[in-house]
Image (cartoon, rainbow, N blue to C red; front, top):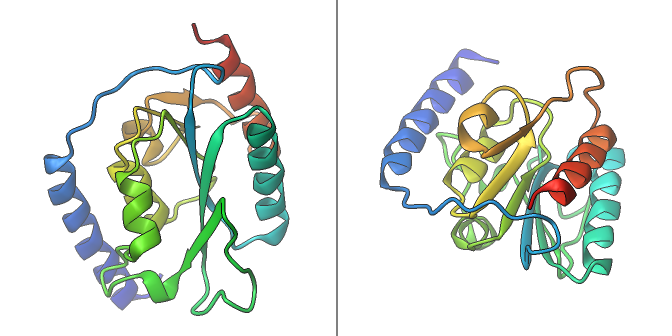
Length: 180
């Protein structure tokens, strides 16, 4: 990361800490059957991983869940790569402030929506996704163990044996069915 980008991200982290102090969130564990609304946040830059997330979203819709996914595309203009659909929204570098803080209507609505479950499918460090996941008012947050998710998620999944997105999704499905 370049020196300028490093400073910009530090400013963003400062803003995140400030916003986190104001966050008022009620934590309540939900299993997959009881959840009515599910939010999925992920890095959509890799098209094959984005397809895996789409299949997972489709699976949840078939289970009659209200699902909204928000993908980050690490590009200046993602309009030529993807087009938003009803359940699939995207943001890119155009939606980042100078301090790397994501903004825009889709981002704000996602953060403020009181999902029963927020599923963070981000496998690597990505500050814009961290910002949204951390400030989301979702009642129950689930993600892979490690990094920012250790403090922002309520349930952590250990994928150190097989750190792949499809494995994480299988584990999330398994453990969310087990909750009572």
